[in-house]
Length: 64
Image (cartoon, rainbow, N blue to C red):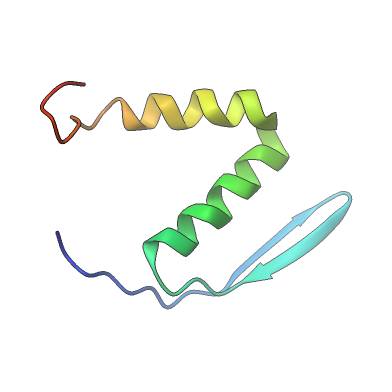
Protein backbone atom coordinates (compact mmCIF):
# COMPACT_ATOMS: atom_id res chain seq x y z
CA UNK A 1 0.00 0.00 0.00
CA UNK A 2 1.12 3.55 -0.66
CA UNK A 3 1.61 6.36 1.83
CA UNK A 4 -0.68 9.21 0.78
CA UNK A 5 -0.61 12.76 2.11
CA UNK A 6 -3.35 15.30 1.44
CA UNK A 7 -3.14 19.08 1.21
CA UNK A 8 -6.72 20.38 1.16
CA UNK A 9 -8.95 22.99 2.74
CA UNK A 10 -12.56 21.84 3.00
CA UNK A 11 -15.34 24.27 3.80
CA UNK A 12 -18.85 22.86 4.23
CA UNK A 13 -22.08 24.75 4.86
CA UNK A 14 -25.56 23.58 5.83
CA UNK A 15 -28.63 25.43 7.16
CA UNK A 16 -27.67 24.91 10.82
CA UNK A 17 -24.00 25.81 10.52
CA UNK A 18 -20.70 25.30 8.78
CA UNK A 19 -17.32 23.66 9.26
CA UNK A 20 -13.80 23.99 7.97
CA UNK A 21 -11.24 21.17 7.86
CA UNK A 22 -7.71 20.59 6.59
CA UNK A 23 -7.15 16.83 6.40
CA UNK A 24 -3.58 15.63 6.14
CA UNK A 25 -4.16 11.98 5.31
CA UNK A 26 -6.85 9.68 3.89
CA UNK A 27 -8.07 8.64 7.34
CA UNK A 28 -8.78 12.26 8.33
CA UNK A 29 -10.48 12.88 4.98
CA UNK A 30 -12.66 9.79 5.47
CA UNK A 31 -13.75 10.96 8.93
CA UNK A 32 -14.75 14.34 7.49
CA UNK A 33 -16.60 12.68 4.60
CA UNK A 34 -18.50 10.30 6.89
CA UNK A 35 -19.47 13.16 9.19
CA UNK A 36 -20.85 15.15 6.24
CA UNK A 37 -22.66 12.09 4.83
CA UNK A 38 -24.36 11.53 8.20
CA UNK A 39 -25.41 15.19 8.31
CA UNK A 40 -26.94 14.91 4.82
CA UNK A 41 -28.26 11.33 4.69
CA UNK A 42 -28.64 10.32 8.35
CA UNK A 43 -26.69 7.45 9.85
CA UNK A 44 -28.62 4.68 8.05
CA UNK A 45 -28.42 6.44 4.69
CA UNK A 46 -24.70 7.11 5.13
CA UNK A 47 -24.08 3.47 6.07
CA UNK A 48 -26.02 2.27 3.01
CA UNK A 49 -24.01 4.61 0.76
CA UNK A 50 -20.66 3.56 2.24
CA UNK A 51 -21.61 -0.12 2.00
CA UNK A 52 -22.49 0.35 -1.68
CA UNK A 53 -19.16 2.07 -2.38
CA UNK A 54 -17.10 -0.54 -0.50
CA UNK A 55 -18.86 -3.37 -2.36
CA UNK A 56 -16.82 -2.35 -5.42
CA UNK A 57 -13.61 -3.48 -3.73
CA UNK A 58 -12.73 -7.08 -2.90
CA UNK A 59 -11.85 -7.75 0.72
CA UNK A 60 -8.29 -8.63 1.62
CA UNK A 61 -9.35 -12.25 2.20
CA UNK A 62 -10.56 -12.51 -1.40
CA UNK A 63 -14.30 -12.45 -0.68
CA UNK A 64 -16.54 -9.50 -1.42
